[in-house]
Structure formats: structure tokens, C-alpha cells
Length: 272
Length: 258
Image (cartoon, rainbow over all chains, first blue to last red; front, side, top):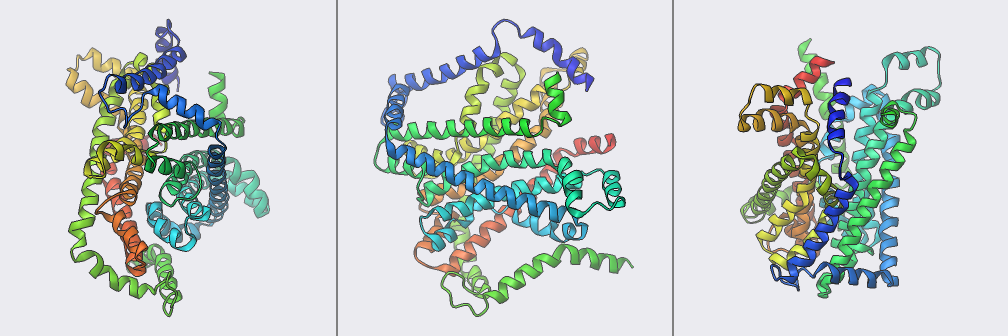
């Protein structure tokens, strides 16, 4: 550990001058300028890639449109609902399977087989069962994010200190208090990792479902804009999905730090 | 005794899958429901549907597009990532922009690239590449950045040549992170392979499955879902074999440290 800190110290010092945040903003501004200039000078057809200012104007127009807010709300609701179901199911099943060795051994091969099945394979089935409905997309979101949580929880439960586990058993802790006092604190960092991965995957699948299946949301709005030739609106919506993605990342990272503020990994970061 | 042990091991690995398949088989055995055809019917249609012709006309093109897009993403991601990771200034300049591009859900690229490249192979390869390059790129940056400073100085003191330093120090040192990124990228690439074909295509695995669904050829659709699942599993097994080879030194080192 000391090697790492001593190795980083001189580099931090050497970076004085322009602060990183300013450089980052400059980078973002550079990208915007690039997207303005490339179509303006004719490198790319303006019909395919409108200049950044046109996209920004379309974005401003979207913000005053009630349909846009409706689409955004459905996307967020679908994402949150799917993520919540997947997280609860993943944590409960993970703890049950993880704490019974026989169960863990018996389910291992099945989990390893089901996990890499791409969730988009379920799209036709979902469409048959529910049509272009919210539930079709929800199935995709839940299936894809469930494995992320489950696998991390399994790692977490396997990581429990055997001495602590045996101690709890010797003192005849009930199953519930064993989970609460021994398993949960050890597994929590893993749960949060799984939650972070699942949150990103859930957003991808939510948008995918809307795009392909046509359930209401931003993805559907993008497909509509594309087929009706509203290119600037389409780009504006894509920017919104990107901002949504960044927002989700920031939010989840904050939650992670808050939930794990007692944990050494987070405390060390703050102290450093 | 060893035979018994082997038998036990086999029962543990194959037990639950066998039970699940049996449940599926018997639960749907007499099924007259349109949506849930008997598993036996699905398996019977599997051969005629996929092995006679469609393997070359649909499955192979899909896999080739996937391979091309993924290979391009790997090359581009590691190359750019190494450059960005080696210079802190460049990293500070580009990181927020890269984080933004990474946060855009990759499937929305499909309608964009249709504008530029039509619905041909080029569009799909491009979508797969652009969609799956971000995890590789950002993980490479992180991996290159966190290479042990002592190792770096040692390489400098011994006057490693540029090429040797790049391959033996930088890429080697970053490879655990690159592999992590490549694993995330693979599942995104598979999603994009299917999505780009479902959205607009004239052939391919995703295209065929959606065609079956729209024409209510339900057993064929089920066989397609099974095939897609098998491909996903096979690719993850191949990936794991490659990972074990590439990271053998790393796993050994970690095991020794424990």
C-alpha cells in the first residue's frame, strides 16, 4: 500500500499548473466545437450529423415538450422498477444460495450457464407474451441486471471470515441474526458493486427494449425521431440518454460511498 | 472410491440442469399453447431450421460481424487507452468527454449509424465497434495509469527499448484491467450484434428470430433463442480460456501472494 501512495505523490505534485477539472471542461468544450465544425465545413453531411448548435436548439425545444418529459419519466420508472426487482431478488437468492454449501455447489453450473445468455434473446418471447408493453422491457431489464447482483452477492457471502461465522454459530445466533451481523456486513461492498454494475446494465436494456420492442420511453422516442427524419431531435435525445447515464453513474457512486462510509476502503480514501 | 467421487461430482454439476430440462420437457409435453410448444417439438425443429442452410446464410454472417467489430474495438481501445493513460494531461483533458460517451447506452447508436452507413454489414460492424470500445478504452487507461512506478523506473534504468517497454511493461502490466474491460465489452458486443439485426437487416441471427416471431413460427423462434443462448455460453467459455492463458502470470502471482 505504501508503495502505491509514495508512487502517486510526486505525480500529483508535478501536475500543478492547470487543474484537471479545467482541462476536463476544455475537453468537453473541444468535443462540442468539433461536432459544430465537422458538419459546418462539410466533412459530414449536415442531414446526417447536424451541427452541435442545431442539436442544442432541438434539445431546448424538447425540454418544453410535455411528451419528452413523459418519455423520460417512463424510462426512469422502468429502469428503477427493474433494478429494484433484480436487486432484491439477487440479494435474497444470493444470501440463501451462498450460505448453504450444498445449494451453492448444486446451482453453480446452472448459474454459469444461464448468466452469459444474452438477455436480448428474450425479446421475441417478451413481445409474444406482452406485446409492446412496459412488462416486455421489464423482463429484459430484470433478467440482465439480476445476474450482476446475484454473482456479486455470491462472491460476498463466500468472503465471510470463517472464524466469525463459526463464532456466531457457536453462540447459537439465529439464522436471521447471523445474516444481519456476520454475512451482511461482509457482503455489503460486493452488493454495492453488483448494484453499480446492474444499474448501468439496466439502463442499457431499458433503452434497448424501448427501441426494439416499442414500449414507451426515450428509446421509443429516438426510434420515432429517426423514422420521421427529425435528425436533430434524435441527436438531442441521444445526448439526453448520455446525460442520464452519467447521472445514474454519479448517483450510484454516491449511494455506494454513503452506504459504505463505515467500510475501510471508503474511509481510507477520505483520509488520504 | 474415485469412481464414486467422480459420480458425485458429475451429479453436482449436471443434477440441477438435468432437473430443469426435465421440468421444461414434461411441463410442456402435452402443451397445445401456441406460445409454449413442447420442448420435443422445439428440438425437432432445431436441426431443419438452423443446420440446413441458415448456418451459412444467417449465423455465420452474424458471428463474422461480431468478430470484426469486437476485434476493431479491442485494437482501437487498447491503442487509444495506452496513449491516453501514458500522459496525465491527455487523460485529464479527455476523461470527462470519454465518460460521457461511455454513458450513452450503446443501442441508441443503431439509429444513428443507419443514417451514415445504411443497413449493411458496415453499419453493424461500426455499431459493434463504437458500442463496445468504451469499457476497453477506459479500463486500459486505468490499467496503464496504475502500473507500479518502481517497475516503470526499473525499465527505464535498464534502458528497455521503446518496443520492449511497451509490450513487456505497459501492455503486460495493464492486461488484467484490459481483460476486465474486454469481458464487459464482449457482452455489449453480443447485445449489439442482435439488436442491429433486429432493428434493420436482411440476414442474421437476430433478424431470423424476429422473422420467426412475426410469422408466428413459434417452435423455430424458440430454437433461435436456444441457439443464441448456446452462442453466448460458448463465447464466454472461449473468453475464459483466453483469459486463463493471457493472465496465467497474474493468477499465479495472486495465488502466491495469498
